[in-house]
Length: 101
Length: 348
Image (cartoon, rainbow over all chains, first blue to last red; front, side, top):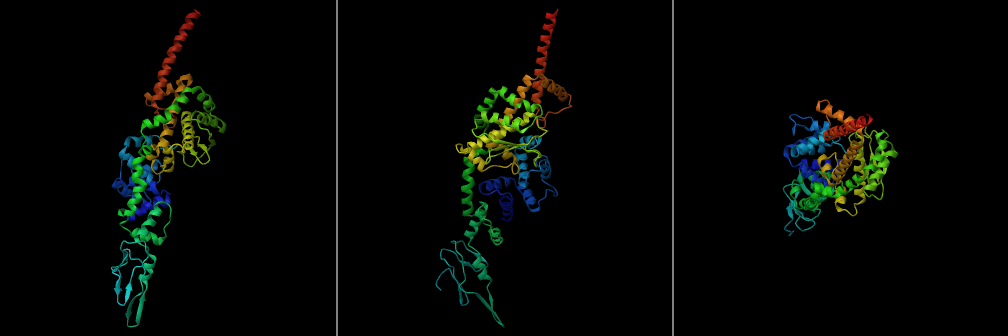
């Protein structure tokens, strides 16, 4: 319970994501327990440094953040989900440098 | 007291204000599910020691302040909706409500906000390619049908003159092609704080922002301009296009979910169109300018010798451009050699 409240505070108070968008983002980030658990660690500690970090598609969360420092915490872990579900697409994004238009 | 929901401590009775189900849990500071009511104690709890009665009003204070579980859940939902900021005390109660996520209140809220929404709006957040093609295809064709016009307005950019005026000519060109009645204004921004952002569109002031980047090719910049002007078209059609309206209201930002950002309707349309227009420009230049063909032909040989890697990002050149350029260069030279032989024969 407290973990989800912590997640809600991060989304609603910090990122100003509320209502429908917030619920959709919560649903997605909770899809995989290992990714969600490490994301909760990040919310609590605000650090990607940890012993035995999760590796998805060859990348840790810290490495993803270093590739694109514009990603917020939830953005890093959502990208881990992309690496798991669509590795080819994720690698195209990395190759293209996460361009934004 | 005959109220079956009341409890009895010594000579004092504890009675709920309303009798619709709320009752005081004598095992501790708890409550049972009930109406939205505030419970009070008729009188204080009293104990005594040798020095006389000791009045403990903790229970009274607690019960007077703590709202019902239904009220606490409503506070929590109002917070999640962005309509209310709980106090520190309310946060404590919220955190203690372990059954919230299984409660009727939360499940009803979820059903209203998400469950029905997700089912009916799948084509906004993961639109099929055919839907994108239907939207942007006709406008790509319009640009293709006026490729000379595109080359004319981009000619000054090729001479390294990235100015407000030159870029605005291109904005106007695309606005006309995309049938935008309210042509957006333009601002060029240098040294933008996010180096990976090449363009933005601000709907409330109808401004296209372009961040010129020396690492970006001209084809890349044209791609960006077309992309942002297309966003202007989408915003100007929100009133008549429900999909655009919904997507702009529930929009995935790139910093929170990069894949969802790229895959949502408004971005996927704009990217598809921008990429196509950039490619039209690149191919048109290749067709018309032998010097560019020669340059790309050189790069082709560098590539097959492992000395150059086209990645489509920094210089806008992809492998297929090099292959096409080499092919055209060979054909061009073959033709030009034929012409030279004819000319030499005529000379004799």
